[in-house]
Structure formats: structure tokens, C-alpha cells
Amino acid sequence: MRKQAPQALGEFLVEKNQITPANLEQALEIQREKGGLLTHLLVSLGHTTEQAIAQALTAHFGYPYLPLAGYEIDTEVCRMIPENVCRQYNLIAVDRVGNILTLAMSNPLNRQAIEDAEMITHLKAQVFVTTATDVSEAIKRSYRP
Figure 1: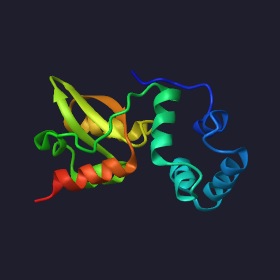
Figure 2: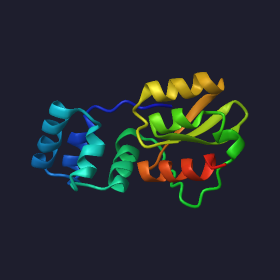
Figure 3: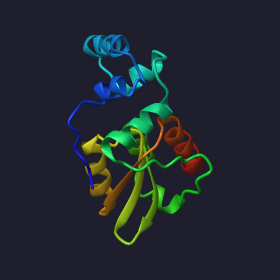
Figure 4: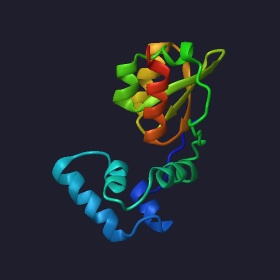
């Protein structure tokens, strides 16, 4: 079940002392000027880590965390979603039980990505949060020839 949160992720990170208000404002200013995901900007600016973002998404929105390093991904399942779609949305299908598809993604708030994965596979997605690096590495491992 997808959960809604009463406050923005950036504010939550400030509240939990993961970033400062000045860090948030700097990233928001860059986002206004150049675009991009706030979480990626905060990491690229060195204000926080991918792991801290993943933990915040878990704590704030209730998505379970799934570290993919060392996780054995069912390649038949992951290849149900084309590699270009996985890279576009930074997600990977890691398992399937019946009509439930386990999706690991760095941005579980991207409803379009979830809906597209469900439409492509004709399965209902169970979403887990992981880091962008974990997804990228898992895609490399799973889609190599």
C-alpha cells in the first residue's frame, strides 16, 4: 500500500537533521534553475548520502528498504521490464509471487514509473526502496548478455 505523507521529503530531512535548512534551500534553488530530482541534487552537492535518502523514504513514507548488493535477482522476472525503462525510472523487478511483482526503486514516489511497470508486466507492484547505485549495479548485472 502506498502511503501519503503530511510534509515534503526535504522538510523531513531537515527535521531529522540529515540536512540543514540552508542545504535544502541551495538544492531547491538549483532545482528551480536547472531541474532535477531534489534527492539527487542533495546527494550530488554532498549534503547527504543515498543511504540516508533511502532510510528517510522508508521512515517517512513507510516503504520497506531492500538493499540489492548481493541480492539474487530472478533474471527472467527482471527482464519482464525492458532495460531502457528500468534505466529511465531507476527501478528493477527483482521477484514475482503470483500476480505480485517486487519492484526495487530509488524513487518510490514516482507513481508514473510504478504504473508503467504494472502496465508492462500486467502485475501488481509491491514497491521497495533502495539506492540509485544499487539499482544501477543490479541493472548491469541482470541485463548483461
